[in-house]
Amino acid sequence: MLENPAKSPAELADALNLIQEQDDDLIAGLVDEVLKDFPEKAEAYRNGKKGLIGMFMGEVMKRSKGKADPKMATQLLQKALDN
Figure (cartoon, rainbow, N blue to C red):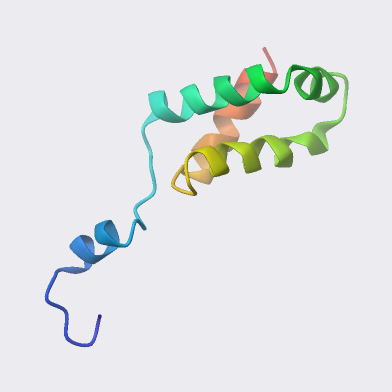
């Protein structure tokens, strides 16, 4: 595709679903959804099992089909879990 592109790199990335989602509201909604689906895990995180952040991240990424910006998702998760 890249050797003789009929489309620009941006168009190819969009067509191949490679663009990361950076919409705060969308990612925050996914975070809220995940925390509501796993209340016992959220409580365990708040009680010291900080390793569960990876499980929450996996769920956010799965629900976003891998498109959520990982840095943003981690920040939103930590903020939601620390409240």
